[in-house]
Length: 450
Ligand code: MV4
Image (cartoon, rainbow, N blue to C red; front, side, top):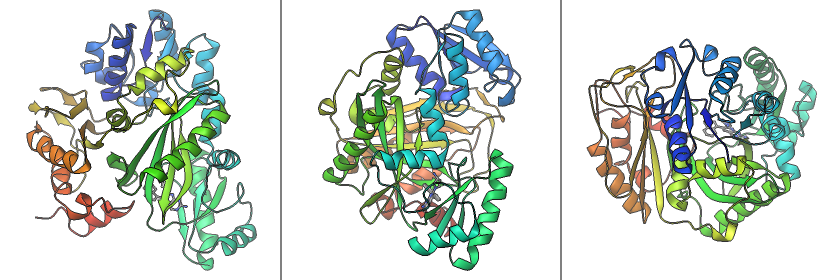
């Protein structure tokens, strides 16, 4: 096992990793920017190192400073959390060159999944169902038109270096395609320095369903069920749940087994999430994330597994402690991401938390790094914390969520709690009847108006 783990992150995920390290008896090093000197992860870690000024590029993304922090403290492993350097293959390689273990997948798999064209080619070769579209990138308008005619309009132009919704353009008809290609290429070039694009059939009202996987890098891998993350706004997930209200047991195990088998063949190491769009009973692969995700607690609540702890164990060379047969799915879990934003306008609301009272009780979990008197700095994302609720059934889970939301007090800043108060009382949500555009339609149609 590792002697000491440096946590290259901040906020609630830094605390989440710290807790797993503490349970494993591994000493921790927190790193922080000057803006985070009074952050909770700094207080709770065994040691801390200031790695730079507030902008992330000078601190949490500052590789030389992180290497120096490992050197000074004697850390022999780095947990990247999510965001920042978590999907940077080069960072994983640089750590390896310094005999420091990156707690995450092999660099080759991070790189492979970072290129969305290569990710899709790999998924297809592994037998994972993909959205119909181009085989690889498209190099000319004529080629794109040929493919689009074959798969049918509307089509979607996506950037190879994209992901998370950046650099996508829909072409409703053949006349729109040349413009969509040119715009997507230009945006991809400007944003990522890579103008490679590919084409897919545009699915109009799918759900976003992702499968959690865990592998030991030696050919053992399991799936931990799905999460339905369809409720999102501007590509930011707002509410995640498992099991998906749209799936039955047979569909869950079928796609789970396909994905787990693929991960065994790939000899995948660590945690991963295989993202699908789900429409008319069919799954279509879109991307794979090679990191721990924000919404991982939903899976922890229904499986009883500590994903971060297992991630650390396999990174240290441990074998998977369980087989697919050992994984049991119990009950229903929902996560609400509470942001420091106005619940109607989504304008960020950094500032000082005057009063803080998180909910508790049976089946209620709050993952957060804030405290009463804490000032949320304006430099990073606006998440205050995550409220995760578990129940035996979806109905019980919703009852408990409503109760927990009523208990939750965060004063001094605006939060998105009122949005969730409204959502748990909205019929489509109660019925599980939603898709990836539902929330934006709801908000545009005055869902949050009195
Ligand atoms: C799509 C799609 C429809 N058809 N691909 C957006 C983020 C990126 N991960 C993939 N995305 C989409 N890909 C095809 N072929 C619609 C989206 C999409 C979306 C996907 C998941 C969750 C929210 C979304 C919101 C808008 C568009």
